[in-house]
Image (cartoon, rainbow over all chains, first blue to last red):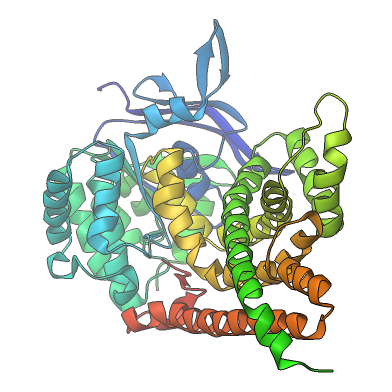
Length: 256
Length: 239
């Protein structure tokens, strides 16, 4: 197996008294697609927020391309990473949020150009070309000059994906990206993710409640419960014939 | 009794003073706008002692009357050993009122910044924007527009406080009216004239600001046939 692109080594996270993650060990191979499932409050979202550097782990080590994300070496000692260190590493990580978080004061084209221009140093023309290409890919080529609040939820989420994709991350995180959508808009967003997944170059971690979708897209499904990984395996192993009673109970809620 | 000759006689002097008053207002306001940012960023330094010190200084400036601060700067400061300097009336006016109002303006900025959705900060991190780009491209363009009406109100409030500076010798409208009155032993007419000038200048400004406020409130609605119900303070809750 190739060297993992992301490694969690005994990672814990507490918010005050509450232990949200209790020792997560997880290797993610390049181009691997992982679906994180589990009851709410099990820490699924926290796992990816730690990787995106939106939260700092309480203990443990997260490595990206074998580089320690949250610590850096200074005068022979490991100290807390500063913004410069984080910026250097998190360029390989991208994220799509539950609530889209598009920039409301920019057109959707500008939303997709800001990162490439200011972070990757692309020229305006280059960034524009790439952004339009990506927006066409997610099916929004005719909306480039619209503002986010002129779009439907599904369209907003597709813009958010284009905005993350133009940064060419090695690992893409999806945080319950369909949870805030009206049911009839979920399909169009999942379709785009399927397309991206098929291209295959990027590792993906999907926090999701869409079990059928997880079965389709994921190479590995991880069941998280009370801050620990309690089951993992291929979709068949986890969703098909699991022996874990609690997992069965959890899954039964999604069957109608 | 009322004397029209005195009224029109004082007009040239008061008119001349008006330019000084307007100039001082603008200078103080620009100073306060810039300095307001300084307070905001000092208070955001993630080091508690600095935050405490800044809070104490802000509270001190806000709780003391501007007139006392002007007197301190003009009459008191030159007598402080070693660091004492004499400042011109204009400098005292700009620094005194500017610093005083910067504390209120920093509060307005703070409320604007806090009104920006948490998701916007997170999206900036996810895009790996630098701290500078995060503020300039994402946060401030959303934080400042909703505060423009409040900033405008403070401009008018400040304009009406500028006559305080006549006490340290800034030759604004009140100062000139005073001078005219002392010379001609006629105070009623020039002071009335000063009041009229203030009214003529602040009322239209207030109306203008009101209009601007309405325009800003409508700004996102026009563009937003689909998502208008999700708007709050011009920022989409889910966007």
